[in-house]
Length: 85
Image 1 (cartoon, helix red, strand yellow):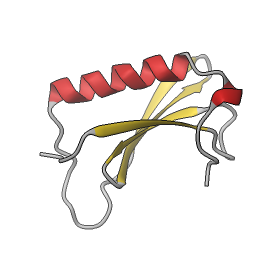
Image 2 (cartoon, rainbow, N blue to C red):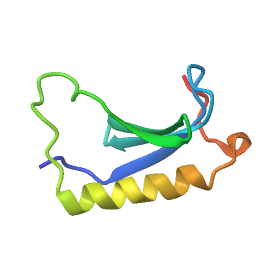
Image 3 (cartoon, rainbow, N blue to C red):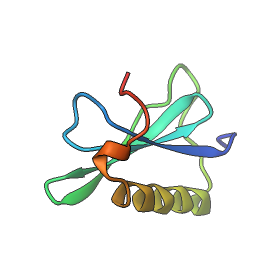
């Protein structure tokens, strides 16, 4: 099971037109939720190193995805956290 509480970071990245919601577990970025062509896109990242697959409880994943969606939809671009670096 993936350890650690998930963290959602709203970030303004140089390669994106709008802010994104990054989903992190400890020091590893799990995914990104973003607006693209009038819809939400969910991009899952490979687990770094040789740590095997992501193993996340289903209910926890749904909870963090819904929280990321709420934060992303309610965040104006000028209020984004992070510098994108």
